[in-house]
Amino acid sequence: MSNGENGGRIVKVNVPVHKNEEYQAKVIDLTYEGNGVVKIADFPVFVPNALPGEEVTVRVTKVTRNFALGRVMDWQTKSADRVDVKDKKYIQTGIAPLGHLKYLAQLRFKQHQIEELLAKAHLDGIKVAPTMGMERPYHYRNKAQVPVKLVHGKLETGFYKRGSHTLVPIEDFYIQDPKIDEAIVVVRDLLRKYHVTPYDERTGKGVIRTVMVRRGYYSHEVMVVLVTNTKRLPMKEQIVDGIVAGVPEVKSIVQNINDKRTNKLLGDTDKTLWGKDEIHDQLLGIDFAISPLSFYQVNPQQTERLYQTAIDSAGLDGSQTVIDAYCGIGTISLAVARHAKQVYGVEIVPAAIEDAKHNAKRNGIKNAKFVVGKAEDQFAKWQAAGLKPDVVIVDPPRKGLAESLIEATGEMAPQKVIYVSCNPATLVRDIQRFADVGYHVVKPIQPVDQFPQTTHVESVTVLERTEK
Image 1 (spheres, rainbow, N blue to C red):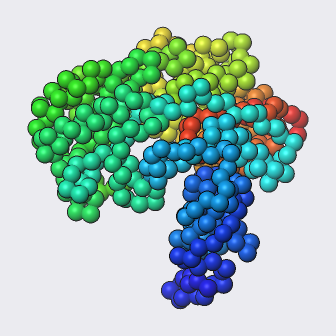
Image 2: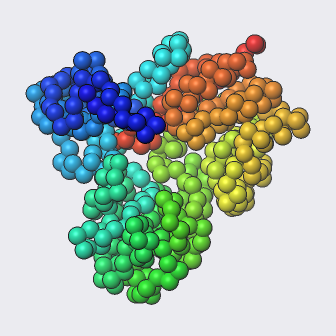
Image 3: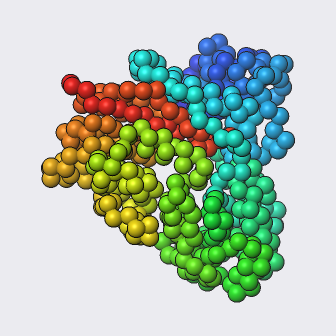
């Protein structure tokens, strides 16, 4: 028996488990969040750090009307796919929620996620290729944003425990470029040395909120961004000198001012304290300028494989017109422009479109045109203006595509749609919607592991126009 709430009334809910009690169970599945699933009298309990096939003792930590959360107290049997994680912080904080699963099993899990969602939607006929993995599936992230907090009276950098605002101090983040981890420690020690106070979200007081570090995978250029709650950064000159001395590859030191009581990591104001306003890196041989606010893919090695798969799938020979929805700073558009007659990119963020135009100019690419707008609105405008693309490439956020964008695509009637997805659930929904306007999946979906050790999966799907 457990209590639920209904419009202020306490309602008794009959469930077979109770908080703080322990149960013996077998793990039967893994959720898309990477939690093990056990069932007690057919009632699901979600348990971190538990793998299918394992027999465990679970303590229930929370009970709701439809499910419970639990914690493994003991293992009677362990999975052959289990990896012994030396540092539990990676699982606790959600930095590496799949760190306890062998890498080949992680790749199978990601392929299976998409297969399962297709099966639920009665799209079993669509095949999913094995996930494209990394040779070294760690130390891949080229960007870190780490919170700064006072922990037991000491300034610390680290990561929040899952589902909380408790900071776990961490020096080696496991999935980040080690040079970035080293730079964070240099900055942390300087902030300690010069007694810079961390921001306290309860009082709204304090100076330093977050340290962001970016490092070019090919260029090795480093940018350090100090996100402050105040316009003034105390001991600024000494901190800058210390970063320049301690981080040999640094090319840019920026103060970003975020003085609002918000969960947003970055504010709108940047002040370059030293060096350049931006750093550079390459993707598929194209040079990109990256500023503190630029959206730039965090795993360049796998991004190149993801985008190359998308470009190869489009079958371009230099004669096609291509539309790139959600074009960001032009990463896909500019790579495609080398293989197409004309590329049109649309993106809702004005700063990203400025970056895209800047990047096109820097690389001497003249056949790419970028506009600011909501992708679905711009598609309707292009359709009304009679634009006839041969290929449409979409790389939407997790919420997937607006129905109006799918309808406008159907009206423009490109031969192919290449769908780059970061969320299998909305991908499957959108495949069904594309079928309504005459587009069907013509080859196995290709998952790509952009974020090893985590539950996220990207994929490339090729849809072609068939007569309705």
